[in-house]
Length: 129
Image (tube, rainbow, N blue to C red; front, side, top):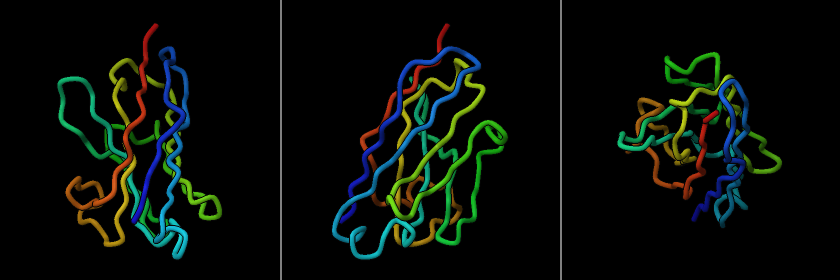
């Protein structure tokens, strides 16, 4: 129904920036567009559990993990059916696989992993000097 594909990952030095993209496709996306979905970014660092870091609702309301506020920004381009995550002032502890996720129903709370049905394959971000 919905396919998600992340891109934009890579290696960056501490203090650098990256912008991740998540292209949404599929029958339901073609019919209703990404704006009909609740979408979010999660990440999983080596040896740690996956955590939700940013979400954007259908009404464009955003939610961020408190510890990352000010360094990350989630946005969405409805015409391109693409979700973005801007990562700034990156630190080595930001090294992780980053995943985008979506669901037609509102996850409560917005960063609840089990609230999202559709997931991308992940994009690796490595922060190292």
